[in-house]
Image (cartoon, rainbow, N blue to C red):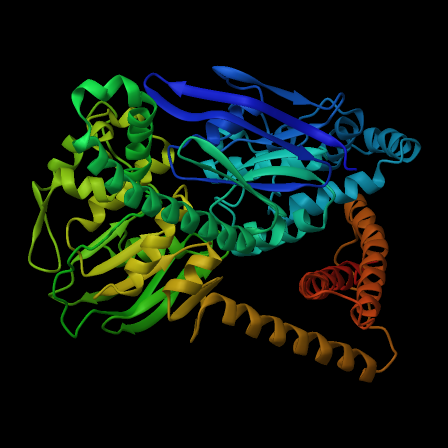
Amino acid sequence: MQTSYLQVDRLTRRFGDLLLFDDVTFGIAQKQKTGLIARNGAGKTTLLRIIAGRESADEGSVTFRNDLRIGYLEQSPRYPDEMTVLEACFSSTDPTVRLIAEYEAAVASEDVRRLEALTVRMDSEKAWDYERKAKQILSQLKINNFNHAIGTLSGGQVKRVALANVLITEPELILLDEPTNHLDLEMTEWLEAYLSQSSISLLMVTHDRYFLDRVCNDIIEIDRHSLFRYRGNYSYYLEKREERLAAARTEVERAGNLLRKELEWMRRQPQARGTKAKYRIDAFYELEEKAHRQSDSGDVRLHVRSAYIGSKIFEAVGVSKRFGETRILDGFNYTFARYEKLGIVGNNGTGKSTFIKMLTGEIPPDSGHFDIGETVRFGYYSQDGLTFDDDMKVIDAVQNIAEYVTLGNGKTLSVSQFLNHFLFTPDKQHNFIRKLSGGEKRRLYLCTVLMRNPNFLVLDEPTNDLDIVTLNVLEEYLQSFKGCVIVVSHDRFFMDKVVDHILVFHGNANMQDFPGNYAQYREWKENADREKRRESVQATKDAPPARPAKPAQRKLSYRERRELEFLETEIAALEAEKAQLETTLSSGNLSVDELTRHSHRIAALIETIGQKTDRWLELSEYE
């Protein structure tokens, strides 16, 4: 029997007249990885904050196992502006973590005397393995400059620092609120592998469906204020949820048939006999309520007409852009085709958003130009486009754009009807914008973009903070959209469903146009990297044994010598794990799920071994 880490009993939370969830009960056991799914505004973040002790519930209780180490990643974490990145990353009461923080500070300041004393302590307290893991986490999340003040970082950088802090402290249970927001694809895939292989228990809110499918073994859903549980991953959840909804629809239909018979009886019922059949009259009203219960799954219907778009879309002619020494584009040429759906991917800082802003005219190129077709009407959904007045009501914010929305069949909708399609009920339409959740504000922003009838949609990270239901319907809308689409996103599932080819930003003005979706690109890249490593190994075997002279211009620092030592140990451990997995795979005794999981792990190991071997070779040149 697994040890219980967390027990939530009969939890209820309201905001004024708004009921978020009612009588919610569930538990998290050791090694259990649970995904929390609900529509925007249903209280996912509030539930996590209550469990973490940041808010209180109206009713119910939250109980943890005694002495349980808990980590909590907020959706928008905050630190004091004057705190350094190092202090934030290693912020903990754990003595080992604090020792490593001291050691890293001494390394950064090159304080040799202090380093000698701390090295002795690191040895005596056996902290080197812990420090190696911490450095791996920081490296994967691209956190390098420990001396920067938190106040100088962007929101996305602070989120990565907070994630690093949670992982470094090695809690037994982690509460994660949108952990993949602001992570590029490389970081997301690393975090996915890290969590799926770890024995950590977690309760997580995320819109990343591949992440949910590959990490979680348990899904809980809040729907209509109640909780439903599914003992499996995201694919299992989809299957069982559809069965539940089908059963509910059948129940409503059966109730409707019975209601018609009961209605006939009620109409024949003499007034004088009313007291003798009160039980049946009461049953009638219960049946009526059940028959009128809607099985609304929260679908957003985006049947908005797009304006006519001509054959000329846009052409990039010799476009160049740089910021200091960082090159974004260099003589870039591209002709965009009619009805093209292009995905843009790449690591953070490679220039994806800058490219979009040049295309839409927000930022001028250094040289070259974009030649835009006369019929092109952009609809731009940007990461920082939320500029609503929080003191305005939802309906007023939309009416400032238009009183009516034109549909594809020649009909029009009033603003109120249009908002209703976006799950803004009449009472919510007259709420102040400040009362909306982050995801609801994003949905409102998407609404204001689409209601202008664009024929060229430019979407910069549209999936952040949108719930899965909204994402599903947005994907269907984009698939049938009679116009052009450019999407910048780190959501692999979203990209695979929407785009027909991708532009990969590798950095330093190096871009690659790949004819397929992200999953196809990832498979191609893994095969190419595997072949490159094979050729590298073969070239090493064929090379003469003489070792080239070491460069004399510099020597390894103390920190680099330590890194070289750790790399040797780490590569050996990874190779051993890979060999063990290969033996297991060839046993013929694995289930399909186990085969899939082990195959994914071997692919990740091969890539990690290659990266660490490259770094070892680089450092060993100076040894």
